[in-house]
Length: 409
Image (tube, rainbow, N blue to C red):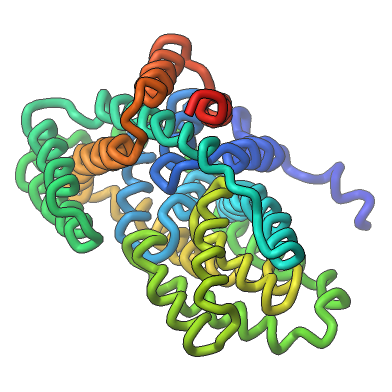
């Protein structure tokens, strides 16, 4: 029976991106996603919207808006959202796992070196080269999104106000206030101008294949079943690994406002409460997390490695990323339903330019951290030209910028 299954599978709808393609693409993105969560989001936007047309600009902005106000690492939640829109629950699982995998593997190597030799060689000049390139990538993403989201004076005012508030005040609650107030403004300003629901959703090819609800449930069962072969490896560590998953999973749903906001909470739990790592080891874990591509919360793998080796690193990583991603997918499903409302669509039309403004503010913030040198200016403008004029893939720009920084700083 099992051998006959491949011949009876229903083929994916024409034009649907395969799970293998999603995995390879996000593995590539995850391998070069240096520079923080907004850099990763910008690279994903460039791929999913600008290059492959998997999502409309509006759909992408809606996903970013949703991820901003939900718990968990924003970038990974956005990746899960994109995978969900393209291939349902399986697409979300494959995309999120692929984008985390490179950072996880690199951090395992760094953790081994750290605990074996007591130090890891510095890569400061290499990382300095990333900063101006990341700033350029984020600003170009804001520009490309703004072309579609800013349709008139009202949207431009919303985008500028959002950028100004984040640059002058900043903080998680300001971000929430921006999203809420721009949604109210959109509802008041654009309700009568929105097109009917049927036309609004016509261009979204990326809502996934038919039967996605059944696919979501089966993908969750598949994810659970995939862990069964690990049982012999885990052996007597089951209780400890369960504690790691529960601890990091519980903290992950309290994470609002990005990884840096989360650092004090995780430090209190893993250093003071459980004494899994020393204070210095925790600081080093955060530093190593920044060296790797991907989200800073991959630092959880360092802590898990210290506690229970490879299995502990996997358990901590699973705990820190999985619960928020599930919350994101649940909300994404309801977002599809409520977007049929004319009032909701009008509110989202107000939120989208606000998100553009917040992304632009993030680009300015990153640019401010770059060394004030001619090298920084050269990398920044070279990245702008490569992106806007020659449409170079962002996956090539960041490594090139790092090498340039290594040679010239």
